[in-house]
Length: 270
Ligand SMILES: [Fe+2]
Image (cartoon, protein in one colour):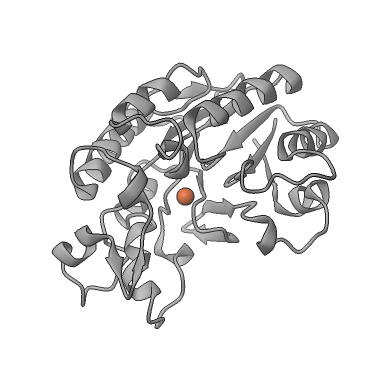
């Protein structure tokens, strides 16, 4: 079974007047590779309605399971006016390929378990306090989730909420081969290298070091993540960790979306 892995499509930001849309390009590359399933590790767009439309269209046109966890951008209420991010979370639950609180069993016995994940500041430099990280701004810059996301609880509590659910599901499927998916980084290897004057602070908003403990405790086989716009892999005690972000067009190395997606998408065979 061939499973395509990609994240951070940012279809709205990456729209271009000429050439195919990101969705069309992704379909073309998925077909080329004869995928049996596609995993998108979050950040399809800056709006729940747009992201859901992309997912439905990809699923209908590809005819394969399109599995997904929402990323921080997918939760943004920049245009839809929704005040409570849990309402956005519930709206995403209407899509059947959403992995949050809904593990997906593949035909061959493998299980895909996922959650958006969140950040608990463990990836930031410990010279900053929790109160400083709670500000979500420093050095005249701000982390925009502070503007457009409102969980009504602290970031650390959101992380805890998602982590607990993830752990319960991993426990329920213990002994089965598992692919774990988060949007947030699940291992420090993928954060922005330090020393770096800005990222020593802002790395705090990239994920949590606690997710890596779950990989080893539950003998997960693959760990998928996104968010940081890197394309990197890590062999972590025999667990293959993959970050395959398409990222923003200005970060691309290829002129066309099809070529860039060919370079970016990772395929795992299980
Ligand atoms: Fe993100």
